[in-house]
Amino acid sequence: MQPTPPALLLDVDGPLNPFANRWRRRLRLRPRGYTAHRCKPDDWVARHAPLPEEKVAPLRVWLNPAHGPQLAALPYDLVWATTWMHGANKHIGPVIGLPRLPVIEWGELFKPGPDGAHWKVPQIVSWARGRPFAWVDDGITAHDERYVAAHHDGPALLHWVDPARGLRASDFAVLREWAEKQTR
Image (cartoon, rainbow, N blue to C red; front, side):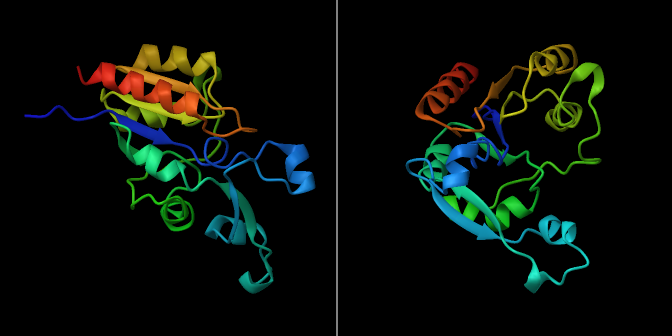
């Protein structure tokens, strides 16, 4: 029987949408390989209430279509771990060529995590239930590493991605190497 591959928990804003590159945003210069996409996720429209949806300006995200095939080629089960939740399957995955993925559904968004940990970490550990996982996010800190080490019974890689640059070749190399070690 084949062992279950580790899960790769994907955040959108930062790793896939390099939103923090402010000077590029101001000049509307996309990073190389990225294309601009406009969408109206449900929570985006809700934030602009009471405006009707047709009057809400779309959200602009930068996505790199090469990321989908690169992620799919990694030896992981891909899972959305983003505030986009199911919206990632509607607005992000199709643009970069990913199939419909499972989604970690967050209870309360942005509720401070214990001991300085990211608010997502307790729910990620609960979702994983000891399964090996790698998590890519732009909000990862040493607090998260400590929390996962203390509360998760399996291997875990918490991989910080620069939100001004998004996923790069070096990030994919780290993810591949770690996953291959888990399946040996």
